[in-house]
Length: 566
Image (cartoon, rainbow, N blue to C red; front, side, top):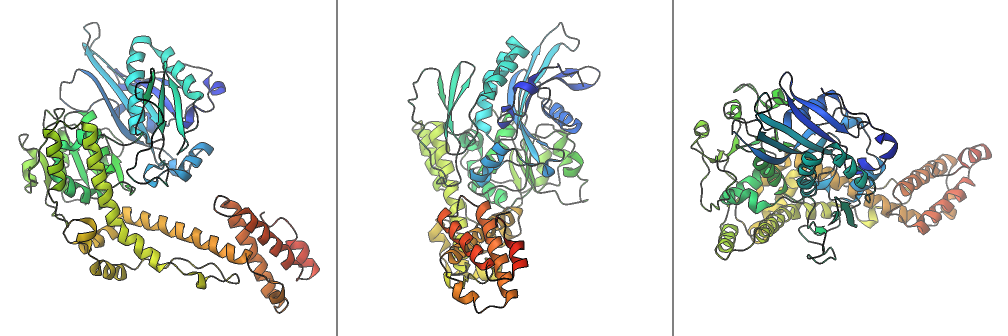
């Protein structure tokens, strides 16, 4: 690797990591291939494996003869990421952002601006270099906007430009969901709002600025890909693709351009919003990636892993021939062609034929695809509806579909919640019962899902398949956690509103000690969930705790006579 230039940024850049982990410049070396030329700030930690991944993924891995600029993104597996705790700002962000936008401790996002132009003065006859911004935040639109300005300016100005931008970022407000942020950037201001967990799915917040304000760029969404630009060629397959993503099926997107395949992979993942896609996905993936052997197996050796890959190397056509779902893009995939009636190709053997493009899959969807969405988009094409409006139509449609799918699950969990009469201040707080699939299926069978969602099909079969997925398991874990917190809050309120003096007089000491320990646990919960527990109630429980101590002998009293929140 090339030596990094030394700097004193560790003394000056304390907040940069809230938005940007580091910015790298990666070049092509005749002897070693892609290599790290520069990293800023120099104290930003990247392991050897992470640097290698960034170097290999920052250059297009194809034979397209590409010349010019390409902006694309990928994900880098973090070494030891599972064991690292997020910093204070990222922890606060994770606590209030939508679940689908949480920081994944196992991966970095990387945004690469690659430039390749002819240069006869260089040994290979080409100038090849990539500027890569690495971050923990999944703000696809935002960082693409940043890189569109930063990278070309770097190619004109050099390293001082990167240092100056990082100095600006150092003074940005924290990335806190719900706040309207105005971020100075290269002589302008980027205005944005990060969604919150409580936002209505698919809603848009007014940013309070007129579009014509000089030197101010309003970013309507920090994270949502332009669905119509990415998927207009595959409109007739969107229902099937939604099911495949929902069920965590292995999908590979093959095309000649990294910017196109990375955008399509990100668009696919976003189809099931507001549900979090919990399987692995790599917007751009190359044969040099350290996880190559994990994903590519000899035919028949093992089932493909649950991952969505974006690739450009023709090698993958043969290497991934055992994958069940392949989206093969045309050579001119940068041309946006609206295809309303293309069919799924069931013969996967045809995938090796370069003339055969489209979706290859033997999967037959549980739900009927319907024509309402395609008709509406086709009408929009006829009347020159803006692409942004077409994207909103697609997003709203699939947000509604996902929410209709989740609604019976939400209602089932609500109906199984313990009632207020099950909560006793003398007992442990009740918990949400374990999810019973067969019991839930009976609910689905009695519901009119066609009327609820507007789509016919085998909803029972879809729910059974979904139950086996990582997407479902994490969603259920989240709901279990939320229900447990709600029940603990209700239990805490029951304790606070009860009177114990007369009852404690009738209890033996071992029962009183047990009750004191329960009060301590309740107060620990209250102190760690101050955002949902009323202060007045907490003070009353502290008073109950002090009173209860008075009912035990003196040596135990001394043991318990300390701050109950400790």
